[in-house]
Length: 177
Image (cartoon, rainbow, N blue to C red; front, side, top):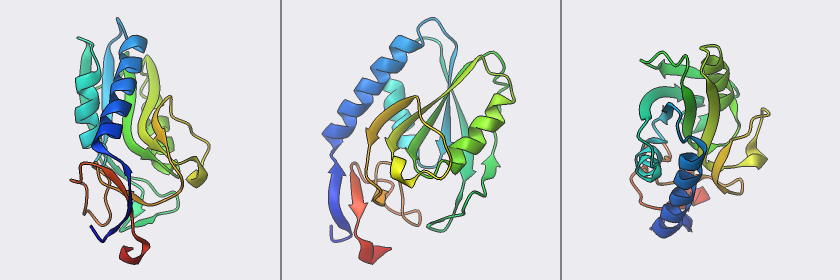
């Protein structure tokens, strides 16, 4: 795979991380009405695996399609909501599920938007966190792995819509960007 600089997280690393996150979420949301809000497209694979590790009967799923990227470049804070929720979240314990927290523009926008809809609680779960890339002050409540500021692909994350289907997380070789 000449497009990779390195494989950063193997399938086993991913599975162990998600099992840990699922256990924490299960413990914290016992007896609550949990609504998982997946931010498309990147988080779909993470969401599917995470749901299997959340051992709760009261767990629903919703989707938002939100983008702060134009091509491969961050738009510098302009966030577009391409698909909003279909569910009224008032009274729900909402957990936003995101693949990666980088600049924070998208999650900051989504969090502010959803807070205004009066959920019972609102938290963030991200598979990967890149604190060095943060442009706005926002933190996740559940973090799978903290990673360095490198461009990662696979496990739902893409480069120009490619590589989402890789079963691992890799660092894209700079000559392919």
